[in-house]
Structure formats: structure tokens, C-alpha cells
Image 1: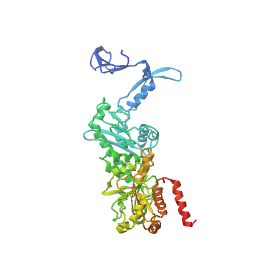
Image 2: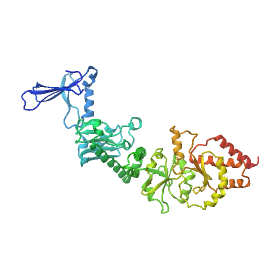
Image 3: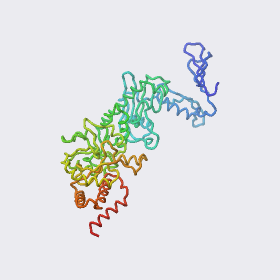
Length: 496
């Protein structure tokens, strides 16, 4: 026989002794010849190279059968040598496969313990799943589904390479351990199996990529997973929050990649907010349901953590009006928010952008004209300032920095700097807003009116800018100069 070859000898029932012998080395060619065979049936003979001897070992054979043929209907048996207490050796036939395909059984016939055991087998997780999806898909293509939504991140998702897709079986035979064509990457936390009898057993990875049946199954699976998550959120919100803390970032990836289901994914997102307790979450729908008639837009503020955001000057006007603001503290929020321009007809607006109009415009034209000369002078003393204008959002603070409507937010700047994509010394031009009702700004105006050349004006300008930087969570460019300006003002105020 040829080394590293497959030989198949077969004889049909009713034939006296005429058989057929088929031999191939797997390189594309084969030979067929007539042979004599005493018994009906088929013999498959594998001829291995010496270095592939491990494939004759019992442990290896058991492992391969367990991996690829554990659930096929017919028993896979092996002759095993066993020894009794008296050291007598006998050869016994042992069945290697379990033949128990849970997904082919009725859902009512499977116990929770069986689901948990199977989930642990396919997921490398030792806990119970949050949800079990067990059903038969029908229509143009029929397939069996047994998927699991985890409650916690399995070990391999935290420390190993995360692979996408459930196991693909065709009539109980494992075809692929992770079929990427069945689920999108953002649902990579979903584990389980899909069994489709309509696919050919000899299907290749290339054929799968071009098979229209796979796309139909994928559409069905995605809708089923998202529907189950929505049901969990509506029926058991605390359980969903626990799940969301583990996998919320995965769902957000889908906003930029799954445009068909973007609306459904948006409904599943949760956020902390100005009016909720710490570590409590609400959805977009809950936010909209709580809006007053006066409020027309959904407001949000992104940053590193709740403690920083809750004390920023951007929220002062919202607190005064008792309007809620979503607090987005996941770094991925900055990258996916452009995918959610609105929800239920309500536009999403960043609280730290220049287009916020939460307060009626003051009679600013005269005030802006009154302060224009001072603002022009202040601007000359400051870097990265595109404009200085009177603020309608500040109630308690003297100043804040805002971005243009389409400009990069300060939080995005910090993220890009941490990723090494942006030099810390380079900042986008910002707009400095000043609260003309604040005593500091009013004092500054009096100093300017008395003497436009007063050196304290430049000191005030830089202090107002630096405190706005600190309030938004950014770093002061020159901490030493910041401290010296404060000391200088303290000395001047005491007359020493």
C-alpha cells in the first residue's frame, strides 16, 4: 500500500464475492479495481507514515471520535484490550461516541442539568448560561439550533484567543469548530451548535463562504439572539445589567458593523446617567420616557468615569433644569456614537459641544459686543482657542471649554493620546465659554475697563483656560506656570 493513503474495499449485499477496491493518496488521483471480499460491507484502511504513529494510539482515536463524531446516530466502536483482576486479557468492543445530540431532542425533554453540562462542554465555562436558545429553523432551509448566552465571560474570553461562531454540524457530524459565517464578530460571546442537514458533508471552508444557505441561517440566528437579549432586559432587568457589564462593549461593536440590526442593538444599550444612582443603568427608551415636554433632544457626556463627569461645568444648566444626561464612560462609546445620530426621533447631542441650546438665548448681542474687545485681548494670550464667547450653559463656574459641533471632544483627544495616535502637545482648537455673571469674569472686565494693558489680564486669561482644562478632566500643559500665576494673584491681592 502507498504510505499516507486511504484504501476502501466494499461489497454490496447479495453479491457473491465481487468487491471494489478504491485507493487514493489524497493528491487528487485514485485507482479502482475489482477484488474478492468474503463479507458484505465496507472496510476503510488508513496507511500512515511512521511519524504519524500517534493516530494508531487509543487516546488519539478516542479524542478524534469525541471531537468529530460524538453525536452521530450510529455507534463508533473500537476493539479494546482489557485485563481482569487475575491478569487475564480479553478483547472487548467499546462504543466511543455518546450518540446524544441534545439539539435534535425536543426542548421539553432536556433538563437544565443537561443544558448546563453541554454548555460547559462547548464553552470552557464552569457556570450556567444566562439564556438557552433551542429551536428548529424552518423555511427555505431547515436547521437545528442550540445556542447559549453566557452570564459571565468564560476563561478563554478573558485570557485566550476569542474565536467567532458556533460549532457547525451536518447530520450530527462536526464540520467546523467555529463557523464564522454563522454569527458576526460582535456576538462572539454566543456559544453552541447549529446542525443543518441541507448542507453537503464534504463542504469546504471556501464553499461555506459562498453558500447562500449560511447567510439565511446567520440572519435567523442574529435576530434570535437579539430578541432573547431584549426579552431578558424587559423581564429580568437586574440579570440583564449583570450580563451587560460583561458583554456590553461587544454589542456596541455591532453599531458600526451591523447596519441591518442597528436599531435593535441600540435598544439594548445601557448607560449611567445624571439622575440615576451610581452603578445604576438606564436604556435610551427609559431616558426618552422620562423627558419633559420642554426637552427635545437626548443629551450625553462622555468621559473616563462618573465622578469626573458628574462635577464638570457642562452639567450645570442641566442640573438647574432637572434634565437628565447620559454618562458614557466606556472608551468605545466615542467610536460608536456617530452610528446613533438619533433614537425614536430624538437627536443625540453632546453636552460639551458648541451646538447645545438648553437655555433660551440671553440678550447676548449687546453683551457680546460689550465684551468683544476684552475677548479679543484674551484670545491673543491663549493657544488653541478658536473663539471666546458668552456661555449660556454655566451657572456656577466661570469658564469651560467646548468643541465645535463636528470637532473632536476632549475625551476623544485623551483616548487618541493613550493609543499613541495623537501627540499630547497638539490639541484641536476649542471654544472658551465665559460666564459673565460670575464674579471672576466681572472682576476681569473691571480690570480691563480700568487699564487694558494691566498684566493681571493675561494671568486671568490663562487661569480661566487652565481651570477649564482641569474641569473637563484634561491636564494643564504647564503645572508650574499654573501654580506661579495663582501665587502671583495671591501676592497682589494681599498687597505684598
